Length: 75
Ligand SMILES: [Zn+2]
Image (cartoon, rainbow, N blue to C red):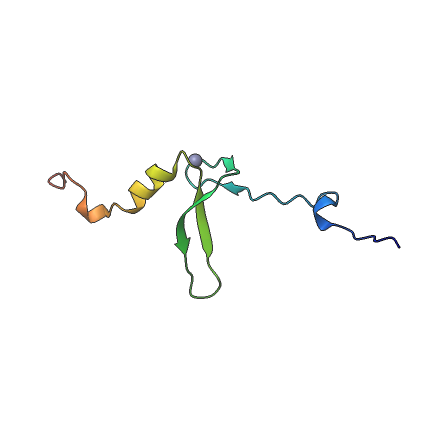
């Protein structure tokens, strides 16, 4: 008996690599890191990814409230 099981993985054009676009440098990375999850009122929201090089920078920006920035004496 022959088993003909079509594998969706080997189908033409069925390659779905877990690639994401970096939110900072807009580069396509195959090692995406979730840096933020945006939840919307209507809908599942979306996830923000960054490449490994930009992760520290993105996290630094996200964890830095604008109000607590140093040098607020100006303006
Ligand atoms: Zn990047």
